[in-house]
Image 1: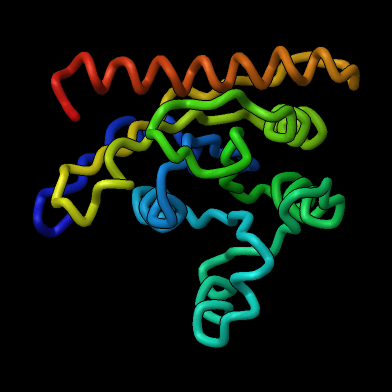
Image 2 (image 1 turned 90 degrees about the vertical axis):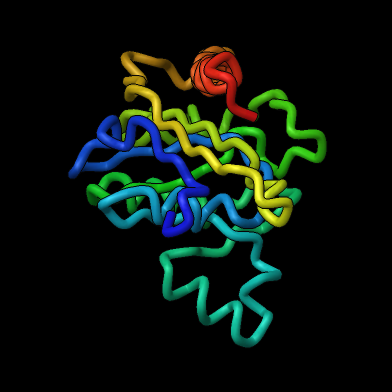
Length: 185
């Protein structure tokens, strides 16, 4: 931010208090701190459990509100931790695609973000990050926060979660399209 390389758009869309799920596209390992530093409130985020085994890094990410998640399986413990944080009024960051994009394009969403928002009864703020995967090339970074999406009355049916997950991804795609149409890349 000091060098004018980061532009934050719509941070006022993130509620100042109460549980909120931040749902973003994922381009690089810079994304969690980039989103976290763009906000005036603390957020928690999932980090792959292997990172917690790296001596200094594991300690550091714990200090900035990361909690471990087992990749490649349904980690019920991590899901419950995130749900509890949301119910307690905290913010939690999640990447609906479940992994980083290798191409920079948006991938299909998994139902986890939708399920988490429904179970915790919290709004979802869509976020789109631009160029974090090109940060070392001195590209301008952008973080755009959309308006909160309320889960409404969803059922526990998988189809309902899939539909809501698609709505969340569509909101992220709309932010992405707006950033590209504004002449930024």
